[in-house]
Amino acid sequence: MRHARWLTAVLVLAGAIALPATAGGNDWGTWMFSGHGKSWSGTFFDSHRVTGFVMGLTSLVKYNSVTSFTIGGKTCKLGASHGTGYCYYVHIPANKKLNWTLTTRRPAASSAALVPCIMFNGKFHCRYGNG
Image (cartoon, rainbow, N blue to C red):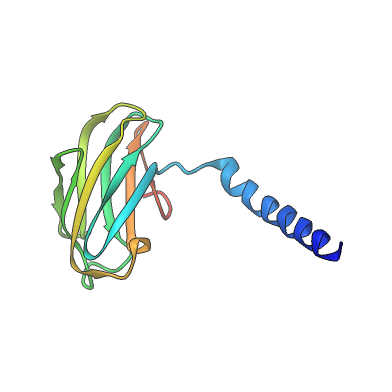
């Protein structure tokens, strides 16, 4: 009986914590990540019509930068001063699933070091804050 009450309390607490995070939703799209070190890939889709992409890293440019970024078969440009890969002026319909690939100058410890951004409605929406 005590174990059941403890489990119920944990589930209620977990639900209370999860609700605010999911209620607002994420506005940077749904990115799936695979890979390791310098080579990453995955898929992307979003419910908005996307007009631009940027992929960067959480590290400073002098420590690591993007050396190649492709999404949906399009090779993106590189921004040396920001260490990013970017594709602007694209027109991706809502809910279209795209494959992407990324290489970096130095190994990234995990996919948490990758910072994807999308542009829709004239604004950027990024994984770690909007830029």
